Length: 424
Image (tube, rainbow, N blue to C red):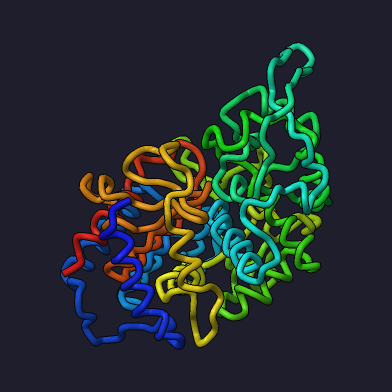
């Protein structure tokens, strides 16, 4: 990582660390310096065309510059079946966008001196002692053999998806899918009556893909860390997030499960079939999970639902150097650490992975369309995406709810590319 990036981040954090009261606010009719209104209009036209061409059934998009909301739109339908229009405060299943929030909770415990990032996870969850690595597998009966790992799994491994754990039903390895299913490990979303503690303890008994630290393998590590928050804080994970992150940031619509009023604003998951958008059926997950079922499983990797504006507040806190609305959640130095490369050369050259986000490198900036070096981002399983550029203090979010092959949706990359070309 270049020295210029570190200097840039220090300057940004230094400026925003003093802006403790900065919150999102509408730009109103006042032009915001540094961003082209004409080019924002082009973005709006592009999104409108995507709706008219049925590339997506509906979306909410937001652009924030210097803490001011310069663009916020809702287009299309929240429910095609019901003819229900999308609203700016519509609620989306944000899936893997949960991960950065769980990572933030871990960093808060780190700042309080309650954990170290290189602590073995078995120090807090003993079931992870003596990890084993998969050696052989029999498809006939899903039996397998293992060998002892030469390394323990650390909190840092779990934060960076280098622990060797897998991801069950969405794992790229069919062997792991079968092993996780047989063991009753819960993946992603569920309406069943189970807790993260129960699922994580089952997971701890299963073999790893590889030695911890050897590879980047997208995993249920953040679910493990959600349970770690419970163990260390002594509070249910949902309570910790509400009290320590959501309430201070005013993220009142970000929850694992929705109340009756919020449930009416939940966007349907859609899939494109037979030339039209339809409500997605129950498969390995139940699309109704945020407002139905037992409501006992708090997935740190994929369980939250939220609005575009709520999530923008979370990202603005990072751009502010860890503070929002007069409340400090993280130290600027912790954010600086979290934005550094934590996985070495295990990722490609356009981005690396930090402790909570993917981060654009100088090569990624040169490639174009991703933003400047240091821009951080991620997305969710149901087609939600976000990015935040600390150099130009700009945030972009585009939330949709689709699954399957879709209908030629290119709004994600177009929105991001055009947001950055609107910077003056």
